Image 1 (cartoon, rainbow, N blue to C red):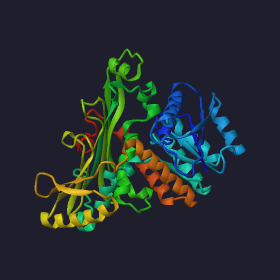
Image 2 (tube, rainbow, N blue to C red; image 1 turned 60 degrees about the horizontal axis):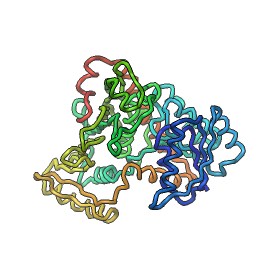
Image 3 (tube, helix red, strand yellow; image 1 turned 30 degrees about the horizontal axis):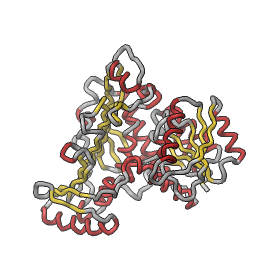
Length: 439
């Protein structure tokens, strides 16, 4: 049986790993933490999963509270308290995550960590050391790439691999990247009309990490996973061309609304970032922007563009899409040829994902890919899929060297972009090639 162990869970993503109970997982889960409001919130969420009416879980939480929680974890692991397949789940303060992960791997535990793992050059060195140690000990070590389980991401990847439809990948240029992914996030989110409280440290980039080193983890992963689905990437495959960061300024009233903590002066948070890089000759760009609060009815948004020689694949998530991520196919050749290729692709995809279809989207040569309700479990449900995949990896008894290598390339790219942005920071936000979120 697999045993789940949470160390200092400071983010609700740690609890989402327990939203379901996959087969082969022990119902007794362990938590080691210093105590306080964040631990209490974690336990309330798990209790909520146990108490829900539909498919309740039956977790039994064994909790240790105390400042020596990491030492107590090491002792428990050494004594064999967690059984033969302990999996440490990490989600919380990003500046401590690497130290917890290293302690877990040294104790013989598999590690599944929320992103980001590396927010600086120092933490990148620790991630590289952890990857080598995990591989040498046949332990699985991965970050939670939930976006891989979004049906939109899956279909985009499938269609970009269809040479009849998509053609060959365009290389693009720094002035006109062939792959663009961007996202807009919001610090203050309303749940049932009430602002979701964030801890004050969430706004401290030395703890949370800058935006260019945080949310871009998902975007860079999507680029690598989509363009090179079966490749084992190496450090020489990626080279950052330009990078920029710039702040979001919060008023004292906004900070208090979000955290409940009073603030006398406006707070400048280095939360926005963009960078362009070459990945095996393909020019790619990612960008992230943080605003305080979304407009009514809106939320976080994702936009992307992949340009092939035959067609473009676009994801939009604006008002026209009711703020739901929606995949479009746009022809770059004779529309009839693209339509025929798309029909063949949809026939193949619908055999695996029933109900997937293509609908002409208001103009010739543009189609919207529609998916039925229930095909995607949603953001929270994606965590359960991540856990299932991780458990399958453990059961296989194989450490995926390509997954470890690709994860390291991802974080090296992000940290290189962060460092370059610091070197070239200016009032012009690094120039037009690396500026803006909604490309």
